[in-house]
Image (cartoon, rainbow, N blue to C red; front, side, top):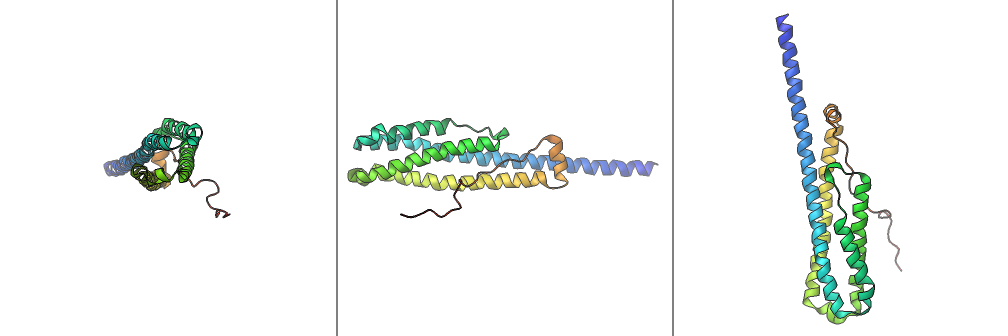
Length: 193
């Protein structure tokens, strides 16, 4: 009887140690995902911080854009900056709203930059060229950080869904998290005119 009690105690001890390790692994992956999200927010914020400089520069060169594109770009920059996602408890809808605000800002910036084609002096302005290069760099970093976030979310999601870890994950409320997804229609080749 004493031998059976020792074996049961050893088995319970092994299960307990495994459970603690699994739980801590989930926490580690969740923190990696939170860190990756912080980087996503950082690069989007960097882009938003560049908008006032670009807008001010374009205002000095244009009349038409002041009333339309500049106002839209400024409004969308404010909306994008104020759209917050609580990474600890976000949903697919939260991520979609965040991405929609960021996409709207990106579209406004693209239209504003295209409108600059009408102003050769502005296109040749060194400050404008620097801002344009910084914005292009931001777009590249956004893509990189979104990919890193998706990889962290994938590692987290896989770990909480695999057996037997999913038993611990379900017991402590670790839930699957959504990814950034491609924009609707991104799988189609654009039409040329």
